[in-house]
Length: 419
Image (cartoon, rainbow, N blue to C red; front, side):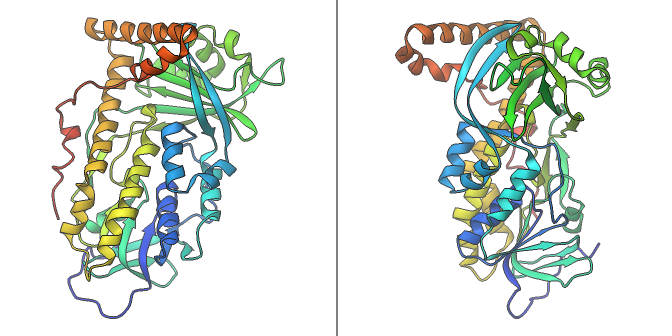
């Protein structure tokens, strides 16, 4: 690794306006927006073809609306399967139905489609970044076996495992002891050519299982399972040993409602540490996505939070920064303090905490709240069948919401140390 920061004032033009390290969803979306705005952008990733990884695999109406507003929906929809109805189940019974456009996809195919849509102003570089040097006026990115890249702004979008942050003395602080566990795998129908439902969400009931999502993706039916359990839990072992029987035992009437199935792929898993970046308000460099704050995958809010970040960064802050001679730490700090970003970050953390309590806690108070939550949804579903107009007015009551902010270090997003 190279030395962390340099103080000399560089001279001359930079190779590019903005360098983005990390070519996953966050980096590619940012490159698309900035390139379309006319900035010279270099997107750097070590994978020419993004590998198959278990990440986000479905989005719903909120994310779709944001993608439409950002004019980024077309490449996603070309790599995805749309569906408009989700049947929701709980304790062996149909709970209600969710209507609205959704998309299911494989993450690596989504990235390929997004990269294919990059404008000509974006130069995609395949390479391994080996070091960073940053200042208010010029950022220097070293790439193994290639020429150094210089830029006015550096965007780090390489996720939570990015060791390059050490060059800048940026650390990750754990803000939750809970480590959500997610599984992804394909299903194949038995004794039929197709499943009975396009999509199903089966909710857990205080046993540490948040929910099981079944939905279409190109050429397959995908299962996403979200847990608040220790990876060493015996049930987790049973899922690996005999996944079909583990699912049938955990989700009564699953086969009766969805159809008989077999597991048609390996079982991928992802254990998430909920972390927040410290010492990131530094001149010339900004973090987005998981590089800054990781989201609980069970909430389904990770993509929405990312799109909020990308929109505020690309449409508001970067145009202001590029109009100045330098990008100092105070200007960078304005992005992290952006009210819309802060509100979204806090909402993601509150919702994760609320989900955990609702799905995993079994003290009397939360058992009663859980019963009330599902009872309310069944009542609203019954009203909808009798009077759709009244049900439309009551629809917001279906949403799981944390009624008040939980006062914890996790929500103190303004407290990270300054550079």
